[in-house]
Amino acid sequence: MRYLPLAEADRQAMLRAIGATSVEDLFVDVPESARLPGKVEGLADHATEMAVERQLGALARQNLVAGEVPFFLGCGAYKHHIPSSVDHLIQRGEFLTSYTPYQPEIAQGTLQALFEFQTQVARLYGCDVANASMYDGSTACWEAIVMARRITKRGKAILSAGLHPHYVSVAQTMARFTGDRLDVALPELTAGAPGDDMERLLAGIDGDTSAVVVQYPNILGHVTDLSELAEQAHAAGALLIAVVTEPVALGLVRSPGEMGADIVVGEGQAIGVGLNFGGPYVGLFACKEKFVRQMPGRLCGETVDADGNRGFVLTLSTREQHIRREKATSNICTNSGLCALAFSIHMTLLGEKGLRQLAELNHAKAVAAADRLAHVPGVELVSGAFFNEFTLRLPSEARPVVRAMADRGVLGGVSLGRLYPGVDALANGLVVAVTETVTNEDVEALARALEECLMEGAGA
Image (cartoon, rainbow, N blue to C red; front, side, top):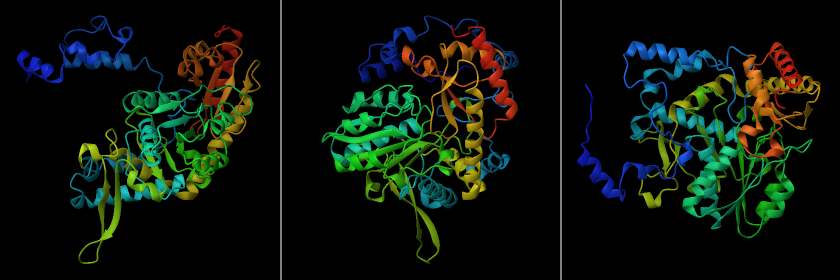
């Protein structure tokens, strides 16, 4: 039986209330070229449940499964081994059904888990305080930019060329509605330091700059010392925002907070969450204590009750669901509670020593893989200092090569042509991520597939 709660008169009343003449008006921001002209080809109007299951299963079998083929994709989403205990624990009823502490004082277990999560994120990022998670890394990045505007009363942010283009796109979309000015640039495949535009960033800081936003390691895998950038930003009254898309790196490299970053944000997916076809993920957000009241989202705190017993409270809750919209520091953030719990459980299982060992293993495997791939004829390693992700320059366009390797059962990396369509200077770039899940046999399979595809002229 179909359930249609709204009649046509109801729809027309709602359209009039928002000033729209038709449902199509709701999609004016979607380009015509991105819309389907009619029904999806090959999709039936109706089918039985068994028929749908059979069809979806057939479609799923066309995918290359990350755990079954050599896998080198990265660029903001990473395949790490997640202990089975993480999934087991987050599915306990008291965690799985609680979701979010709208009545915080009666959700002591949830608040304590979030308190521990905040502590872990703050220590990982080298900051004084962290909030109780956000949607994902890209929206956390934008929240940091508008937070910097509130603090400095300025409206220009300088975005590093090494910032993930999807993060840049989210910021540009939101800035259309806030009036923030974003100074952006494209990365260059400069040998030794790809995507590092430190000179541009330093030269661009002025009295109108609210923040400088830099990714660490950047989209091409390069690791840069942020200390000088932090000093120059502070001298001009601006903030330094660091974005970390691979948190495992912080088990080995200096944290952004140690180098002077005022706000550190990023994606926590790599620890505990898994790839999950692109989501749900978990945004991490931390800052210096003096900025805590401008921080978006929620903050759990520890206290004592009337009897002196330890307890947890929602110390700050500055999102629009809790306070008046015009007073909220954020209108798009939320607490990704279950993903934050998964992150925290995995981090607890690793411990400080385990995280360091995991990071060292990632780096060692990446160095060995980079050395092997650099010996493939025509391939140039352009990355200098990197963690577990590096960039190669191929002798031809990378996108066809990636597709040809996939046909051979190897997911060989992310082509820069996919991230920066239409930018010829980046078309030959290939970003390769190597985690602890990669074996020596996987690296050899990638090297062979890459050499074969280049010999066959896949990118010509």
